[in-house]
Every structure is written in structure tokens, then in C-alpha cells.
Image 1: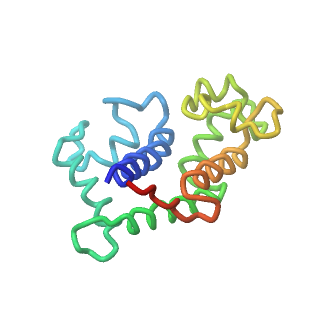
Image 2 (image 1 turned 120 degrees about the vertical axis):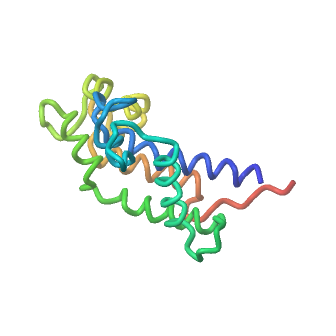
Length: 166
């Protein structure tokens, strides 16, 4: 059960990180912006508990492949795998757009300064992501780093690592 709970939390964090980065930093928090606008269905400028729950209930329904009202480990892994395969394409709308906005000098990569200001979650792992150690991280390096992290979590062949015996 502990492994399953850990997978649920990790899955939520992996799904939330791109959404957080997709919003311009000036739009984070209680301000109106693309992220709030998506959840704010009654357009009152705030996300109510009902709107928040409805949004997440829809995500649950998407993940519940057999529509039995429960999420199995396989259903969650399947959704994570689908999201992971989507990450292999460099031209994703929110990430691609945000990366280009933060790349102030338009050289195709983010310097430490650009990443620190515009993509702080990536900045924290800058040295790890900058695989060729040229002082900038490219979109390709970010994707490859995500793939490596996913492989470590799920074994070298994309399969979940066996659960340790209790």
C-alpha cells in the first residue's frame, strides 16, 4: 500500500509540474490567468471547491479506463505512460511556449539566469539537465532528463520495478 501511495503522490506531482510551468509566473497564485481560467467555470475570478473538485473528478474519469469507479495501479501507470510518451515530442504547446518565452536571447537553450527567473523547477536541476555541460539546457536535454528519471522510477524497460517483499 505504501508503494501505491507513493506512486499516486509521484504521479500527481509529475502531472502538476508541467501545468505549473505552463502558467506565466505573473499568473501563479490567486491571480487570473490561463490556469485559473481553465478551472473557473463560472468566470467569477476564483476557483471554488466545487469547480476544483469537478476538474479533478474529470481527470479521475479519464484515468478510470474500465469505468468501475476505482483506479488500479495499471490504470495509473497507463495514464503516466501516455503522458510520458507525449513528453518525448519536443513541440508540446504549454512547455514549448513557456520555454521559448523564457529563452530571452532566443538561442534555443536556457542559461542558468534564464532558468532561475522563468523556470525555477528546472533551475533546481540545471546541472543535472545540462548533459553536455555547455552552460545551457535545451528542450531536448530536458526531455532526455525526464526520460532518464522515468526509467529510474519504472526500470530500464519502462516496466514498474518489482515490489519488495514485506
